[in-house]
Amino acid sequence: MKKILVILGHPRKDSLCGALAAAYSGSARAAGAELRELTLADMVFDPVLHAGYRGEQALEPDLLAAREAIQWAEHLVFVYPTWWGGLPALLKGFIDRVFLPGFAFKYRKDSPWWDRLLAGRSARLLVSMDTPPWYYRWVYRMPGHHQMRRTILEFCGIKPVRISQFGPVKGSTEAQRAKWLETAGRAARADA
Image (cartoon, rainbow, N blue to C red; front, side, top):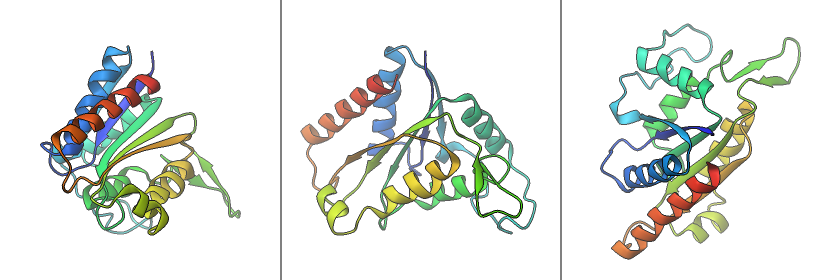
């Protein structure tokens, strides 16, 4: 039984991302996975890392609980929209505050290299967007996907990172959105 943590990074729970997270969670549970969920919109924390890595900023109780859930999980699922080519500010602030040195990675003394402290976990990104996925890939070159996969998750040792994208949301039909929810459910069964 795989331990899966689903993180909803959209600031609204009643969004398409909320429905994708629910579809994924329901299918993962039905497939036998042990599941926990974090809804960032319900959490109380300051998303700003005020002093960068130079200062100490105490973690709020919700962030301490999130760290414990990340350490517990074998597979992380991030559900969020692409806004301005990348992550919403709420999700980026969560990552800035939680994926800190000493928890997610550790720089080596007198070396350009680092230790990946979250190795042994995999991830899936369920990403909605108004941009047609082909345009996001070939014209914009997928900046948000690269940021999450390469410079955040893989940097911390989380791999493989699989990406399921849904769009364009703007102008989509009920039938298209229903198919996207089915796709999220299939991804959950594959991950479980």
